Amino acid sequence: MKPKMIVKICVDIVMTIALLFLMTYELVGQAVHEWLGIGMFVLFVTHHILNRKWSGNFLKGHYTPLRIWRTLLVVLVLLCMAGSMVSGVILSRHALSFLPISSGCSFARNLHMVSAYWGFVWMSLHLGLHWSMMMAIARKAFPKGSAARTWALRILAVAIAVYGAYVFVKRDIAGYMFLRIQFVFFDFEEPLIFFLLDYAAAMGLFVFAGHYFAELLKRRSRKRKRASIIL
Image 1 (cartoon, rainbow, N blue to C red):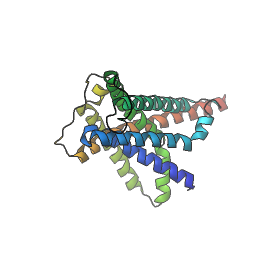
Image 2: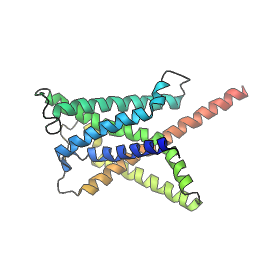
Image 3: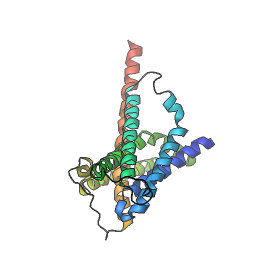
Image 4: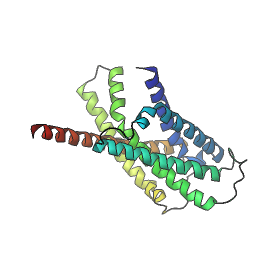
């Protein structure tokens, strides 16, 4: 594997972990949350620099349904990241407390919540687009597979997605996404690891959905190509 690809994968892994910890907010403390947010912004910029070739080809070539979906997710993630950063700067009371900002906190709080929770969903779906590549890397690393292991991993993926759907409802993530709830509820007696595992499962739900939706779009594109060749 090329060094640049290794760096890309490492950046994406760290971003995924940072995203999970950013969702903990009060459980890790406001100061830690703010520094994590700044770190996430740096990683996000680094990610786009490493993938600048994709950005350079944005207006080139033919747009298939899969490419449209991928591009839409990138734009949505970018908007959520911008919303999180702008609102985070306004709300900062630790890392950026030296900035002379004293108004707009109410609007910024709502923007931060919407950006954070929608961003969590869009980023997880975006991760699902690249899950095939991650599985290909895993197959190269562990070439001696078996049908039993393949089915065991598939069953595990389904189990995680099902539990992720349960978490989505239990944690009322949709309530935060649509501002039905103005403030995020945290149970400070809950161990941090349980919270992280729940949100990892919710992320798994959208990774699962993103992966199989991308596979569906790929199959439809292949069928159209075959049909056009026959005609």
